[in-house]
Length: 262
Image 1: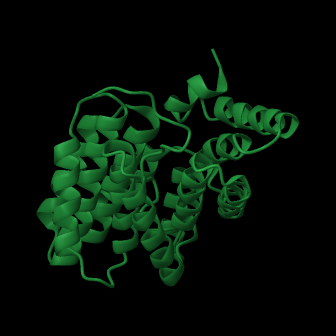
Image 2: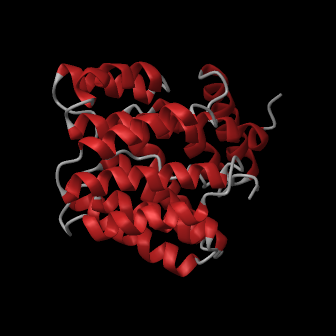
């Protein structure tokens, strides 16, 4: 399966972890937020062989790298196998399955290899394993929304999943995931012609990313907002997105065609 990635199609990048409070967690976040996924993963590697949380976080970083760069698939697969091997309970196994589903989704939506069935199966397995209150549950809901919207073309199911994810992210205090749910709900509103609702959602998403310092996610958020704005403001937003895109070395790669960059 091969099709162009749309402006609202990042692929479910929010991780099952945020910046954290320890110096190590903050260092991982700083690297990740600037697109230095390999360096961030290296900080977690010493603990990943025996500690499930570190293993899943490391796998999530390398899966995210695949989505942004369409590269690094073998490293992500290896990290997932480690995360699956060290998982000790159902929530840990569910978190690893959620990342496997995301990797298969990314491969499919980026046109690398059609793994849609694997993505659905892995996310279904995660849903069966995760407890209703698990921290990963809102992320799973979000990713199931992506499957519904971009692989099944079922916008109603996608909207319901995004809303569940939005409520869960609010309850768990996960502002990064909220930036994604705002953005994808806004994308559906834009498709339905609800311009004011779309602008509000895209603006909320952008503000959250600015507040968090999620630099690598800024250009996609700016392009999304531009699509709901008048021409003059849209041009300004796209110019800023292009500047950030070039600053980060052309990441995310799938944004290149939308910005018209060489």
